[in-house]
Image (cartoon, rainbow, N blue to C red; front, side):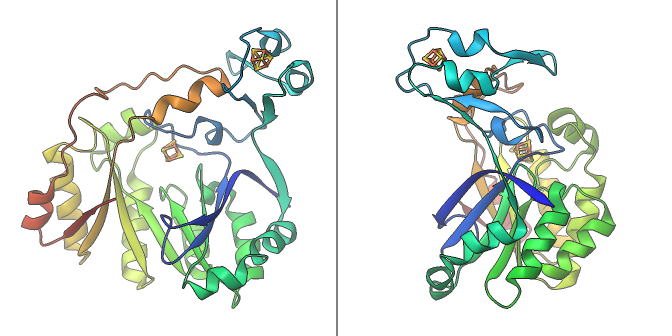
Length: 282
Ligand code: SF4
Ligand code: SF4
């Protein structure tokens, strides 16, 4: 079996304890309108172009194809670009190949108390590949996943068993609003979060603060109540990245957030304080 990877960050200080190698798996079942990795959302192979040095000659688009209702670059776009700015978004690896690559940095990562973090996209959407990698890494390196928690309870239980650390995103607690902004129900996300907390595995809860969507007093209060009732005492809040839309043009897509991305962000500190949850701005 092969896993599809759209990016690898060799030394990250943001994706869990210590220094970590972050593996970004392509494909996500959600469709958050603030997603800053458009090339990581779809499972199929895609091509992207760099804007740096682009002549705007349009040659790459002329050999593009309409897929999923929009123009996309193709393999031919690579060869026609006079500046070599077009590339495939992802590479496919077997678990053995990827683990070998990861373990080249194993000694450094271990020395910092770090490890490897499988992120995305949504890593659990390729859970069989993640499990295969984690089995090969057992006893060698700390294994983390950064997840939105959207998968069946059976899949989550399997991944829980083989994972040493979780970075778990909570976005919107209201189910209808979650469907509207992320494209799916949050029922499984809440269930899997409860399973994680009760399991005793180390984890951190992360909340992206999206103006007028996830950062409302109502949503943050609902999250604070939900997690504090489960005994969670710490969250990390991630203010909206104003550069979120910068990569959309590279895959010929428009960035059309359905919220006011200029609005000031509410960190909700007093709300978390009220529920005796420590909130750290990242
Ligand atoms: S990416 Fe290359 S082919 Fe496409 S418009 Fe720019 S220079 Fe032309
Ligand atoms: S869950 Fe993450 S990767 Fe998936 S669409 Fe939302 S922001 Fe993008």
